[in-house]
Length: 166
Image (cartoon, rainbow, N blue to C red; front, side, top):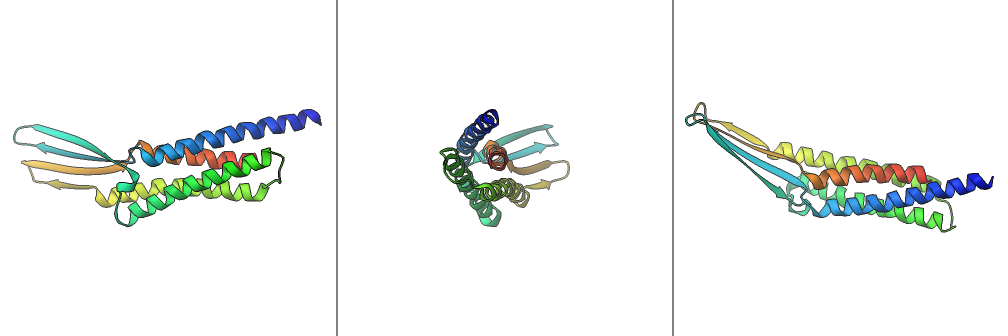
């Protein structure tokens, strides 16, 4: 019985460390390049082209899907922090929050996935292309950058660790 309890404490400690590390990853994801915007122009007359990529932060996004992505990303960070707090309280010998940790973990995963889906939809709304026949072709592509992926991956891992820690 003593070994089982010691093993459970070690598992809870590892889950708490994972929750802390992924919370840091989510917070970093909020403030680094979140969306990549690539513009390409090619000329059929000369046979040359150019491409340029710009990056935007999460809080630079506008319109409906940008706003939803901001809300989902901030909510993901809040639920990641809540999962960490519940884990720490449980590990300090306090009350067990089994079902609450399960709910927080599932909501964290769903919010993280929703945040990156919002970026894809935002990108599809703002991506465009124009064809000028043989003379010129232009395109603009908007896609998730490293911040969106970091937030999504760390949010999903955080939610899974929160569920495992219960």
